[in-house]
Length: 276
Image (cartoon, rainbow, N blue to C red):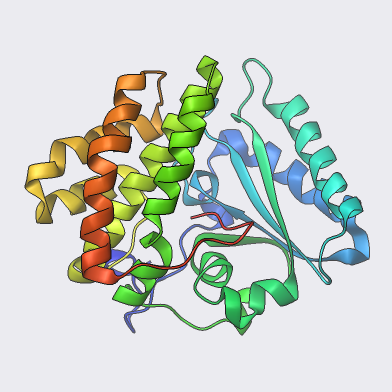
């Protein structure tokens, strides 16, 4: 990867590779590759890893194994049931007490959806820039290149108001520590990533690293630096403090929504299956 996550032409370089998978995770990655191929057979077009495992920053017992599976046609109910069985099997073998992964997850889509114009700055960008090929022919070869510009900022971070509304509903309904921890993790990560895309075109690069994203944001908004650094820490090691959640929902989140909308504009609601 080149300067600031870009290639020599100034496009976002694909992050991650199978060569960066940390040693403790190689067994589960090999198992996932074999099981996906066996489960889908000729229905499978390709499969990908994304997240901290292919970036080489995964932490045993704390990081999940995140996968994208592309089928030759749109997935059926049976295909989705197959994905659930795969996830449960990986969780059983690799995520129990003392296991190497926090859990496994599979996003399942047909190749036409992934390559379609409607998903060009959503799932298409996600696959081309953030996913590492695991099996099959790489669909990124049929997608355009992407720059860290204001359009990408709007498409990836311009719906924070909707995210906050959903998070408030989840907060009101949360009853267990597990629910609060997952919500704190989700919201903190979204705030940091939206904070990064707010300043991304000015910085002129790309990163998925939460701590680095917070530091880049801090260069342009030092008055909110401590809050963003705290959000990055929460995203990596979430707790159950409702006070932290309240601050994110009532202070940092609304401020960030207004700033992001003023600079980059607002995008429409996300479709089912989007991940950023």
